[in-house]
Length: 309
Length: 296
Image (cartoon, rainbow over all chains, first blue to last red; front, side, top):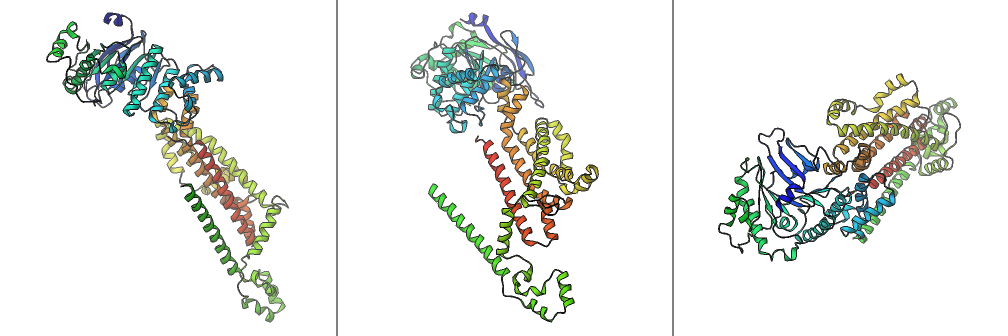
């Protein structure tokens, strides 16, 4: 599995670093990771470690101080319709209706489409997120969850080769978040979408991601570790927490965020992140394996944290 | 909620009507008081004295109509007659000094429209550039800061000297006074367009012109319209003064001409018309403003 994903690397991030003007130390440096086609990857880390900056660099909205990003062996040098972005604060145009917000994106991707063709395409994606009845409403008339659905529909509507999500559900209540997570999972499964997503929510990461990138704290933050989600795809919110593997992964993530991420700041994290499979780590890297298996029973106590940071 | 709003609107309307009645009442009492003995000396005047008094604009023999003679201020009925006269024939043209008030108003509105339109054509694109480029903003800022507080009428001599046409000079004065609020508000609105909307446009590879018209313009439209509304208010204030100065045509000239004729009813009528037209212009821009305002 591991070698297979490596060989089909679709997105490649090499030695990425960012120093803001006037800053003494880079916020992050030596960030390396790759994403395979069709893979769902989440990145978790404390605030200020540069997750959003990394996402913006992938989107082409910001440029890195060092390092390169390649998508499909081509260097990312600016924004592109190949990469759809769902912004943290939905970023819908408040003067346009739901339908016209999505049509704005569709016309950008296919400028020579006729009115009817655009309309048909828009309807399809409005229906995909279950908003057909609200398609003529303005964003201000929608709830937070519905706005974020429109943001997702807009990003999917241009059929990007890669989807970038910047903490899309951060501002939503737990119930709404759950429903939209399920929807996102369903749509991604249908479209085989490659996704890179920032989250602060450990449970969300375990539910959605195939692999979870753990970032150490800044300055000089890095992707310190890559956690493989050992639970197979087809995960659902209803059954997730019945799998003992869930707690192993969850504890590993929380341990990292609470204890280890701070120790690994100032570039003490390895530049080439280790890939670990919590609970099944006898076969993976030596250091982490020993660390993980020490004193952890299959039914380890759940750390009562919903989300960290 | 709705009911209380309705009753409050009703009450306010009643109060307004009451106030109007009060003002009209005071007017009526003030202009139709008991005849003053000022007219009495007419009996003792010689024919020459009466002739002299007539030349000075006083008619001692008109003692029979003391109300008009008393102060020269029109009574309500005189005012009503003037309003009816102007309203029944607003567009007559009996030569340079005797035109219908509608015609004069047309001249004024035409000048304002032309000056304001030209100002919008310059200010809005320039405001876009200034709003998008901090460099140009800082370079032009000292000029704007110095030119903005100049009274538009101060430009008049310079305009008359260079343009040598009083009509175009009037338009120029409207242009120069309308440009600043529009320019500053456009720049402010454009500079304040949310970064995330621009980022959406960038990730969708929207070309610059489409971005300007479909993202920045609607986003900044409420602020731009506010600037236009302020400009229109100033332009309507300035046109009256400018036309008094250059003369010839227009509602401002009408006021000045009727003052020279000592026709106070006409002056008062013109003042009312200026007020009503100014209000209608403001209402028009308020409507436009409401049409482009979005709830965020």
